[in-house]
Image 1 (tube, rainbow, N blue to C red):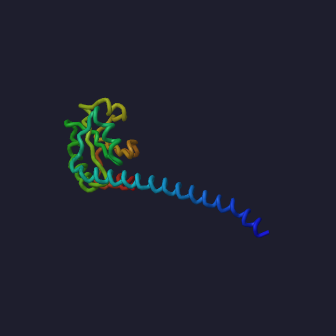
Image 2 (cartoon, one colour):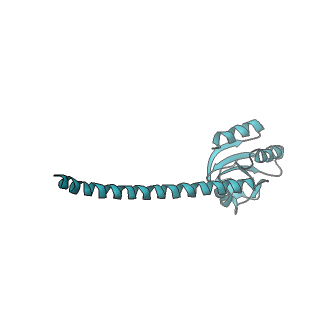
Image 3 (spheres, rainbow, N blue to C red):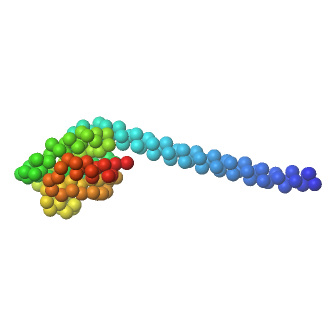
Length: 157
């Protein structure tokens, strides 16, 4: 009877080894995925730290840049727009305040009408916050720095 139990336990033991081997492989795969994700996050943070001034966006570079950075605040403006000129230093300061967390981009709607039209920009200044390439929030008109800060803070991780 002992012999039968040992014989009976053998497949259980083999199954246990196979199970642990699969479990180890699953853990290895999960660890690799986690490491890749951490590396991506580190790269994004390094990329964000190096951006000290607002990006000048246009019809050609717009999508490349909003997809390149994890979170981008885009200012749709024009040089003849008084409220836009008034907001410009505030938006520049937001970029400095959130350096390493957020990139600020500026798009002149007169020079880049395709992008402005695509996002339905009818009034300027308009601020659109992009996260992972998707528009997630919007402010139209001249607003206080606190209002912009509130929008940004609501979407930072």
